[in-house]
Image (cartoon, rainbow, N blue to C red):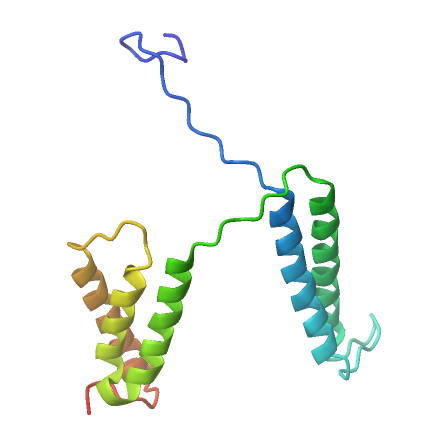
Length: 165
C-alpha cells in the first residue's frame, strides 16, 4: 500500500504545517520576557545574594530573573534577523470577554456567592471561544460551579459567601 494513497487509491491529505513564526512574534515575546526579568531583578535588588557555598534569599530569584532577561534579549535579537516582520493579529473578542469574566466574578461573588459567580464566569468565558458548544456549556458550567463550591467553600473553608446573600 502506498503511504501517500489510502486503500482505494485516493491521494491522502497531508496534515497542514503551522505557519512559520515571524520576526515580530520573537521580538514581542522577547520584549515580554526581558521586561518580566528586569522587573524581577528590580524587585529583588535588596535581597542578599550570597555565594554558591552559602546562598542567600535572593540567589535563586536573581538567577532565574537574569536568565529570563537574557532569554528575552536573545529572542529579540533572533527576531531582528528573521524574515517576515508581520506583527501578529490581535483578536480582541477573547481578551475582552476573559477580562469581563474576571470583573464579573470579582464584582458578584460578595452578593451572589461563589456558586452563582462561578456559573456567570464560565458562561462569559465560554463566549470567548470561536465555536461555542451550547449543548455542553450548561453541564460544564454546573460541574465547575459545584467543584469550586465544594473545594473552596466547604473543603478549604475559604471565607467567602458560597450562596446568594
